[in-house]
Length: 553
Ligand code: GLC
Image (cartoon, rainbow, N blue to C red; front, side, top):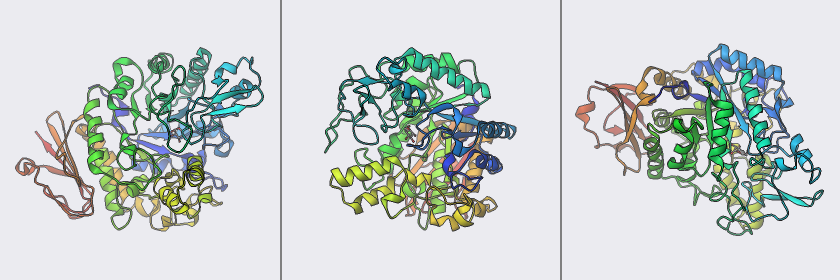
């Protein structure tokens, strides 16, 4: 298997708005990020994935870009960005830009022109039609918006403030590639490509499955991986990526391992890896719908992650994540954020980081930060949450109490509350008023308390990152799931060049006995890492225990 820095490194995602506020306005900014590079260096990560920092009116917190070559004034200036990049590089940390190219903001000059008249040269930069079809937008309502001035509808797969670009237009593609090269010329180290499998729209906009209780149909089966998607990805590779030692990862909902291989098989010249959604959509949501009472199944979780491990081995590369700015906090979701918070956070991290693929840590995950439960819908900022609250309580007969319970579990704002730096006011995130409420548990859960504590979640993550750099089996080894049918234990073996790694994780609050192993074989193995103060055991797993053993030769 070919070696690459992006296979060997660990990525840390920064959601700038919530990371660190340097000027007391209550919103995180670029100088705030720069001021925390020492912290990231201490953790040992190699790459920062920067959620969008481009100019944006923030209908979707930066995922609606109004100028691809400017920095959002709330976040600072281009000089601040250049300084962040230079300082990160001087510490050996790379920067991955989040690029939103399926759509722009409605305030992007291209769209302002496009909507101004039917014969404007930019008209064809977006997708206009005389009649809407029946697609439902990702954040609810019709995916088409009527525009009075020209009497046509434009397509927006997300909010109406995020019109979709027309990738069929070669001019659009040329402009996007040119802008990507412009960022690369600055010295950035790659891209995370937002919603990239949605850029090629199916001709005729065929209807999807009906969405119960609405006049709409789903876009998921019909609008992903459209007919020209691989042509565009290969073109982007030729025009932008080829010949550069950069990292590329595409966000792809509705992607199976077989489809993912088409994007990340190096021979095809498209992307390095993709973010799939299967383990976050199909293991605890009812029918893949997030507004529900979640019911987690470890069996499904193991099956899905294991399929990805084996299907991509030698054919592509996995992205390993449990958290990001769109997902609830993993310790609240898959672990136990009560009495076992620290132990289960370390277990989840161990389980993920020991698999084949590039691990992603989302800010605060390394502290075991938890979900938030705001009392009222108004305290939520996220456009998806707000729209869903309205849609479900007004149109779909869901009670306020039920909807708030679903929101507490699954809202994207669970991930977006400010980073908990210290026990100081507002968790040390800002001296002003934070744009989104701080989780009141910051007095217990914060970086200041954890960095110097060898038993902290932070130091467990730090050790996982360090081990990856010293044991190639963690990066390149193959993968075998052990007891497929155990509903509580996730155990697997990795092997590479004479070394074997045994990973044992208890996902439950009960002690588990394991008799799946040839214990003799592992008797002399070295315990590489554990979350249990009293050491590891090959056949008894205390609640949420995680042990990793290494066998040489
Ligand atoms: C991606 C982003 C999400 C955003 C959406 C629209 O899914 O991760 O935050 O809302 O695209 O850009």
